[in-house]
View 1 (cartoon, rainbow, N blue to C red):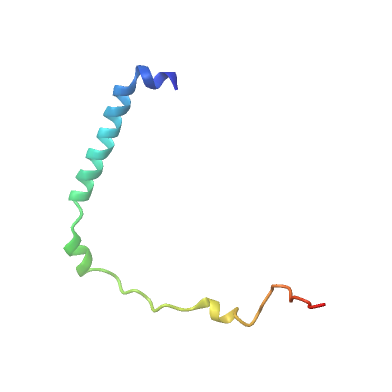
View 2 (cartoon, rainbow, N blue to C red; view 1 turned 30 degrees about the vertical axis):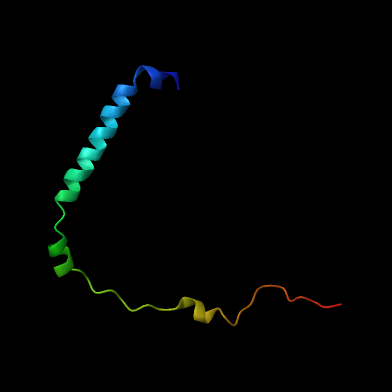
Length: 63
């Protein structure tokens, strides 16, 4: 971690570049076009309903 003391300004420039790039990409997203062409979500299916009868836990034996 000694290099951080010497090159902290490079780390700061890299982080600033990442943040600026992320903001630019988010500005290019067209939310209205996405919502207009959004695919239909399939209905929810409860897969746990099949397994409710199969209880794998050991039964407590009372003495």
